[in-house]
Image (cartoon, rainbow, N blue to C red; front, side, top):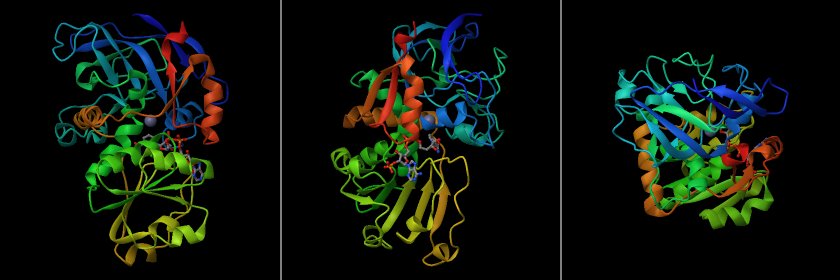
Amino acid sequence: MPQVLALAAPNATAPLARAFIPRRDLKPDDVEIDILYCGICHSDLHTARNEWAVWPTTYPCVPGHEIVGRVSRVGSAVNSHKVGDPVAVGCMVDSCQTCESCRMGLEQYCDNGQTIFTYNSPDPHGTAPTTYGGYSQAITVHQKFVLRVPPNLDLAATAPLLCAGITLYSPLRHWNAGPGKKVGIVGLGGLGHMGVKFSAAMGAHTVLFTTSENKIADAKRLGADQVVLSKNRAQMLAHNRSFDLIIDTVSAAHNLDNYLSLLRRDGTLVLVGAPDTPHPSPTVFNLLIPRRSIAGSGIGGIAETQQMLDFCARKNIVSDIELIRTDQINEAYDRLVKADVKYRFVMDMKTLN
Ligand code: NAP
Ligand code: ZN
């Protein structure tokens, strides 16, 4: 089995450090990818620090699910990618591929519970106890889970589309964001800034909610029609009962009633942020009158992720990134906790050598 260099968390409290990890020998349907860039998602940090009780971390843990690279080898049955192609891998590397959800292109919701996430999932190939992600030099993935990167997209700034991008694109499409709709995005981090870009590009009236006063100008530059400081009660009340859809990307527990009361009749609050502790339960009356919903959404399927990349190519959309070296990873994590990133860290994986 090939060994490759990676950045691994040895336990929940130690910094990430360089380590060698195994990758499986190439199988007929496999694509081997030389990783060029990997984005840093807040989920990487939640996992590296074992913050999610519902999904405990197995160590060593190699995070990373915003992967862009070039194909270095292909198995004998691979027909969709060839050596040298720019390609990408997101949050999943396999699923049962036979259940109704998988057949509908919703592999992240595999009915058999066999979605294999890019890291911290049981490794069905037995290469290691768990899957290892993109904080590494190379990865080997079944061809069906490898995306094509359109040629006009900047490779480093494309990496965050594979998680932050699709996680906002999918609910915006599912809940029909578009002209005539008023859409709110809560939190201007990695996910939130893609939400603002996509909602605006889809033609919805887009409002960004932030706790950070210093992000107001950026939010407008990214496409928000209006920006609301969520700690300012008067600014919040001015939007009472007016939203069709609000997508909440916040990584920490907070009061949901503040957002529920801004939804119009039949409006939906979609939670995509995944805090380590539960949100306080919202007031039921805020749901009853006027018939509002709270929903959740997880990443997006493979076909929709390709559709999103092609949409980005047509609309000239990529992520706003801070490109860093791999030895800056621990500092980047500390800044992520402080909501101090504009708006996604991406590692230049060549600096791992
Ligand atoms: P991020 O870049 O750290 O952004 C989170 C943003 O939330 C911050 O920039 C900040 O925005 C706001 N925020 C943070 N702490 C807050 C607090 N205590 N109160 C209010 N606002 C706060 O994180 P991310 O990578 O976008 O990920 C966001 C969350 O989504 C994480 O929990 C992650 O695990 C989860 N996630 C879910 C999915 C899914 O499939 N559903 C996929 C990927 C990630 P402002 O400064 O503008 O207030
Ligand atoms: Zn992610």
